[in-house]
Amino acid sequence: MRWMIAVALLSLVGCKQQSSEPQQQPAGSPPAAARKLTIGFSQVGAESAWRTAETKSIRGEAEKRGVELKFSDAQGKQANQINAISSFIAQKVDAIVLAPVVETGWEPVLTQAKEANIPVILVDRGIKVSDESLYTTLIASDFVEEGKMAAEWLAKKTNGKARIFELQGTTGAAPAIDRKKGFEAALKNYPEMTIVKSQSADFTRAKGKEVMEAFIKSDRENIQAVYAHNDDMALGAIQALEEAGMNPGKDVTLISIDGVKGAFEAMIAGKLNATVECNPLMGATVFDTVAKVRAGEKVPKFIQSKDQLFEQSTAAQVISSREY
Ligand code: GYE
Image 1 (cartoon, rainbow, N blue to C red):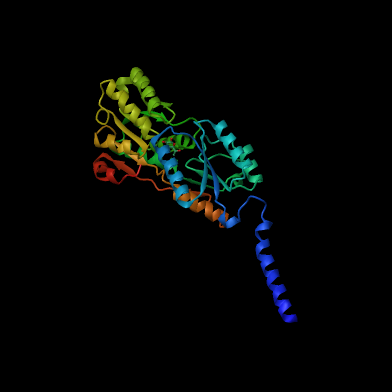
Image 2 (image 1 turned 30 degrees about the horizontal axis):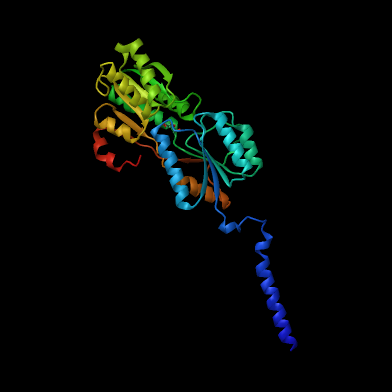
């Protein structure tokens, strides 16, 4: 009889232990394993086809993995990104993904993220901070390399002789700074290649057209080559050249960066001469990296995307396999 009571009591304790577990969770929060991962993504905006492809890749991958993605479009303004990050911190997200519009000015808000123990993964553009521990890693291309590739290609195409007009990306943005730096560094070996004029067109097609129109007005006879920091600006410049009765791709050699579908179409039409691909399809790498960081694994400070140059000669063959 005694042992029967003991067994009954033990099994009661067992039950109690089991059923008491969920009660240890604060009211309203499901057990950790069942809880969705929540990630805040502060995106620059939608200024280019490249960026739209990047947003689609990150959103699509979040959906595939059942991650709750809080998406914030900064419309090209750093102040909006700082607000978005503050709000992600207040909402206690598990990680922050940031595509920073410009390189500087991030210390205060990233210090807040660090104090809240929220890892910050930078995507596609780097930042300049005094304390590198303010972000976990950067997933991006090497923009200096891209600029060099563009210059070397142009040097070959023009036999080392060209008067170049440059359309820069957003002022203060890493890809604008580094694509210029790499291009100029490579030009040092070609004394007869000179940048005649260089101006920002903010990575957009509309501004690319506008700035090119101004270049045509002041320097029409002088324009032999155009180097645009992204395809969208080159596509705008092509429009301006055509409207001015000039022959882009023939009288004027154009090279740009990104490798978006529109660039391949323009190459097939003979209007753009070459593009350096910069891969925006980083969704899978972003979430793999977040998972590693959360598991306590060490990740490299720079995770580099691979780039390659495409010319008119192969554009028609490869366009159907382009994903963006
Ligand atoms: O090349 C351009 C965009 O940061 C790498 O930003 C990115 C650049 C890309 O708007 O099209």
